[in-house]
Length: 307
Image 1 (cartoon, rainbow, N blue to C red):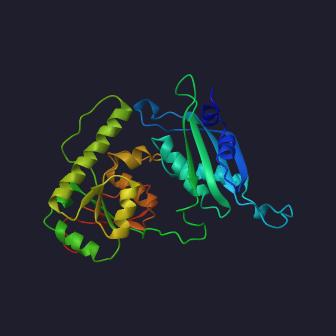
Image 2: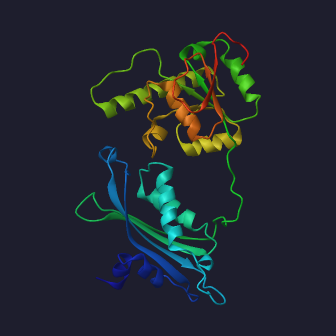
Image 3: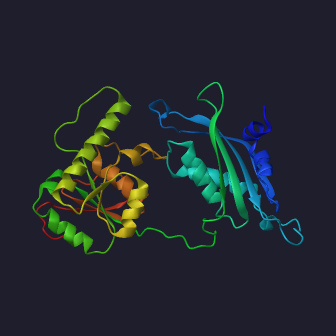
């Protein structure tokens, strides 16, 4: 095996050493950190966990002056494992590439970190380890003391089918947009029964897709309503004043903490989503309020022109 190929398959610490410049940096490393998690783009990878192995090397600027055995002066190994745990807790991911990128970005927010090597491998998908490795440098990343832009808290509204069909719907949108908060609308499935199958996971997807079909019905009624399905789209929309209609499949299926509410309990599912977005309350128009929901709910009848 040539030296180039040997280095390509070597541990990230050896890769870091091989890529060192004239001004070498200190390195800390995490070797063979194995976590069981649900991840993957294939249907066979949903609903099951698999082992993934992390190898991470962080290059840091050498400290000036004595360390004085002071842990606060160095980049703790715990910060690396915490970065991994934090990104795994955000949402279910399909790609190792996405996870590696996010872990690297989080580590580079540490003030000591200059460059990071992240290798992630799936251990249970074949006879060998399948994985990715990325290298990212601090350049272009925000320092840890930079104020992070956060999306404002949204106004969550659930519309029943009667509300969607109501002649008041445009007026309600006018009133809600006048509040000046990002507006996100949730709906349930259409009154037409969805197909019924015996397979529980398949039925869940069918019911979620039925909600999404109804989201497009609402979008067709008012051009202000844009159907969105990802957290990235929602964050952008909330920061830019776009009125959204939630298509739930991706966020529900990718949730780390799967909602107990089923798609057929559409108001309860919407309340779960509202809590996920840290909304203070949810307005429900034309539907009964579910029990056992921690979020504050306000109910209005369909025949009320003013909210």
